[in-house]
Amino acid sequence: MKCLLGGLCVCWSLILGLPFPLMKSSSNIMHHEMSPHHPQHSIPGFPDRCDGLGFDAITPDEQGVIFYFRDEFLWKGFNGSAEFINNTWPLLPTHIDAALRIHHKHATGHHDRMLFFKGNQVWQYYGTTFEGKFLIHEKFPGIPDDLEAAVECPVGECAQDSILFFKGDMVYHLNLNTTTVKARSWQGLGHCGAALRWLERVYCFDGTKFTRFQPSTGHIPSGYPKDARDYFMRCEGRGHASWNKTSAKSIHNRCSNESFEEFNEDQIGRMYAFRKNWYFRLDTKRDGWHPWPIHSSWPSIHGNIDGVFSWDKKMYFIQGSQLFIYKAEAQYTLIIGYPKDVTIELGIPSTGVDATFICPGTSLLYVIFGNQVQSVNLEQTPRALGNGTRMGHPHVDGAICNSNGVHLFIGTKYYRYDSPNDLVAWKSIPDARSISLDFMSCAPGG
Ligand SMILES: *[C@@H]1O[C@H](CO)[C@@H](O)[C@H](O)[C@H]1NC(C)=O
Ligand SMILES: *[C@@H]1O[C@H](CO)[C@@H](O)[C@H](O)[C@H]1NC(C)=O
Ligand SMILES: *[C@@H]1O[C@H](CO)[C@@H](O)[C@H](O)[C@H]1NC(C)=O
Ligand SMILES: *[C@@H]1O[C@H](CO)[C@@H](O)[C@H](O)[C@H]1NC(C)=O
Ligand SMILES: *[C@@H]1O[C@H](CO)[C@@H](O)[C@H](O)[C@H]1NC(C)=O
Ligand SMILES: *[C@@H]1O[C@H](CO)[C@@H](O)[C@H](O)[C@H]1NC(C)=O
Image (tube, rainbow, N blue to C red; front, side, top):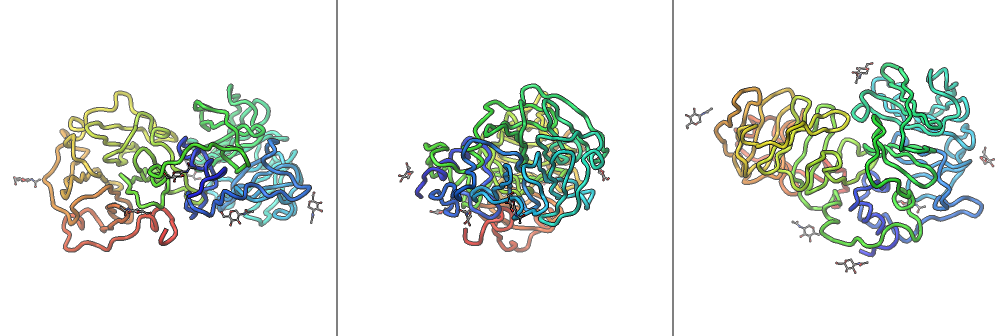
């Protein structure tokens, strides 16, 4: 694979675990559709987004395509050239202050709407359908006019579905459930001229510099700000050019034939696939795909995991003889005192765990060792592992139980059983299905 400019910048952004929104939907991140040979095509008289002047606003639409706005122009997605805003949204003014996609599943008239702010007004669209123009103080009491940036913050990342508005040094946090507004000032975040939530991460842009921040606390991880031209767009001569390792590529390419160590879904519907030191989030696929280092969401975990399951609003990871337990709130927080010994905690051996799963609403944890399935009731003390039953598979990589049944993951395939009973009382093996097609939204054959 020839890897020039943009191509290499992709590779590099992956190894750093940094944002790169061009891995859209079904595109296979390492493949030719991200042709590195065509950075930005500029139409004469239209601006080039690599010029370093930054953006007025950045937002995804309801399909996950990201729009970058500056003056009367917009750029669609990662690689398009500038167009007039009014080609897409004829009623919008030029030079908008802020834009966002709203996330509020409980209010179907608001969910997935795009809002554009200018002066004291807000325009509401569903896709490109205009739904109304309002005064900001009427639609969002407590939110000031002349905003600089705005971004959605759904439940899971904020305590309840929320919107963050930025003006000057202030951040206005609007809780959509309660409609209460809290104004704060976050030292260190600096000026936010545009804000974007991409996958589960939130970024503030000031010119072309961007900073990731934690939307409920304002905490900024180390290493920021960075330059958006290296990560959020492909610009000639930018990006990094030193990463070229085939093995890492197949780990980061969700459609490769590399196996996954585990899958898990937590109580608020966040679904993950784990592979080596990395994870993919599956329930945000509309906005694209990106491999993130496991420790970026679950601090203290490094390297392959053996088992993972969610129970009682917590997420449990088994790694060798160690058990890590995280509180599953907006952020995952390691419970003090962990990791602890998995045998003492769960009554299961400290070696040989291949996969674990627990069905929603139950307390029976299933542990798979080789071809044996055993279970332990997490509500009993002391916890003790029951007798093993032989399944129809000599070995599995990972397992998950959700409302669709039990899924066992082996290499590039998975096998579905209706229930744990069906798994242990098997008469025949169900048909193998493709993980990349059914879980990772990959193209057939890719
Ligand atoms: C942008 O990339 C998509 C595929 O990733 C391609 O279909 C499209 O033609 C590209 N557009 C430009 C302007 O290069
Ligand atoms: C769209 O906006 C541009 C720039 O402001 C303007 O020149 C053009 O006339 C507008 N087109 C329409 C159809 O309003
Ligand atoms: C938000 O409100 C809806 C109903 O209006 C409710 O179903 C939901 O549980 C609330 N969310 C939270 C996190 O409280
Ligand atoms: C990347 O690695 C491949 C195989 O290891 C090699 O053939 C290729 O020349 C390398 N490309 C660059 C730009 O170093
Ligand atoms: C994975 O795919 C590569 C080519 O994409 C192939 O060379 C390799 O043999 C495959 N590995 C397995 C285990 O199927
Ligand atoms: C496990 O096996 C032992 C010996 O075969 C038997 O005595 C015991 O009842 C079994 N326990 C369960 C829970 O089936």
